[in-house]
Image (tube, rainbow, N blue to C red; front, side, top):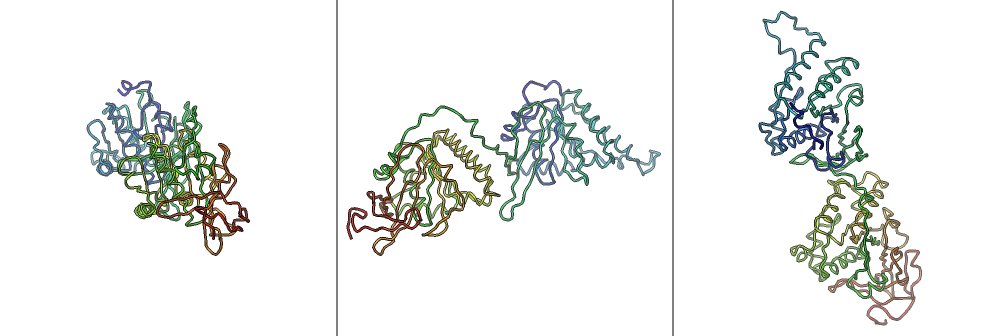
Length: 498
């Protein structure tokens, strides 16, 4: 029977991220519980599990007590799946319909008889189909028939021992619709997988997955973001940067501007993160994109994840500043992705960044901006943790990361909505200042972990040439108060005096 398929390797679920957090899949010959409220994707996970078995040449059986076979096949078809001849669907009829006039029994079946009949049908179906993978959907029907917790436990144990004889890998589905939370199956099952759905006050629903228990296996604990799309359930394993340790030779790369390099003490280090802080309109995106242009000229590849701006507008804006992002994208050197914070979970975003860096050998990553990224977060604490893991991962991959944060206000005492300055290796501060009756812009580096940097403040301009940074200016006062005032009368940008 199913024992012919029992091998040392695990029974994969067919869901990449789920197999990753399960350390390869489900241990063969055991009973696993997949639980979650209606609509969390249990049936979809179960079908993917059986389809993966079919791809490996295994016979599978889907026993349904709550859905009709037609509903099940329609659900599979919506994902573009054909169950084929290796997956049998057995629709378990309610015991009442088994009665006919020839049977001299009362229509009022005792629950004992119903429960026994149901279990008998399950065993008969298994004997007939000889599967190596079985899904039983759902336990709530068996719990209702059992009526008491003791009889329910005995029934689950009977099912477990029956399947154990044949080395069958079993997935039990539980929709958690019982009035009392019964943890019976938790203790009996070899592993427990919980599927959850959360509804934020705005935006798409958020789904997540957690392994509650898995005997004898070191699994990845905690919550992992997931989605259901056409094609099945996707799970995005929580990023753990410490798993990607490795020796990395760091080098300093030019920003493409001698003045900018001077301000940064030589340039930007590979495997480091840079935070660009400033009020709206100071050119934070341009400062990051200047580094992208320099990297692409060196023959490197870059990726930009844009939260706040429509891509067409960004491309038009940069074209007026002499930067053709469209041409870089068409040449395959720049990957630009528009990110909708309301629709994307942090785990999926981290996965997208990681996939681009790994598959395309990206050396420059721009996240514009963290204000938009924070909008995707349920609370600020988790933003810091997500950013910490993502930045550590990118640093260990040798990528230089640029993040922008828009501060509230334009001048005076400005506050950032989220403080990640301690996470970044380099912090670049952009400010407006007043000099001789006109509003100008100032740039300074206030932190650099990876080496020395200029302590000066430089003026910069944004025009059709892009970003132009002038010589260091010393006649400033009130920089740390957030209101830089130029007190001198000489050596403005381009060496002009006024």
